[in-house]
Amino acid sequence: MQLECVFFGPFRDAVGEKTVRFETDAETVGELLVDLEATHPGLEGELVADGGLAGDTVVTRDGKNVVHIDGLETDLDEDAVIRLVPSVYGG
Image (cartoon, rainbow, N blue to C red; front, side, top):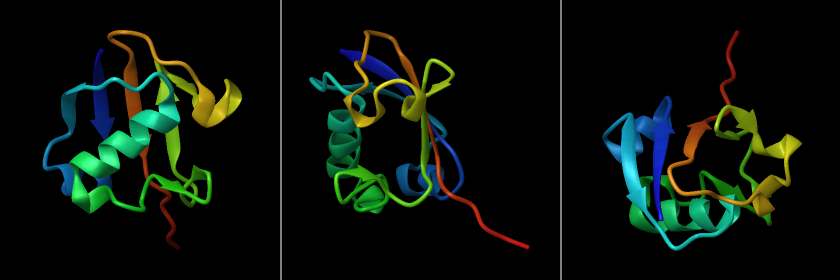
């Protein structure tokens, strides 16, 4: 299936683009994140860690935070829009 993935901050730098159309066989958000890390080495370890999201990374599917759906087990649908926002700290 093909998904639209939108990257923010350092994730965008690692991928080299803000938005990509990504072809995947992933059926869940967790599988997609593993695929993205494998495809873009700069993302390795930045999206998934210890069976969950890395750090305070926020992932949305069609505008809704996956944490409020089924977490990494959230199903994917053709043409879903996935947004990946890294944790940001500052003062």
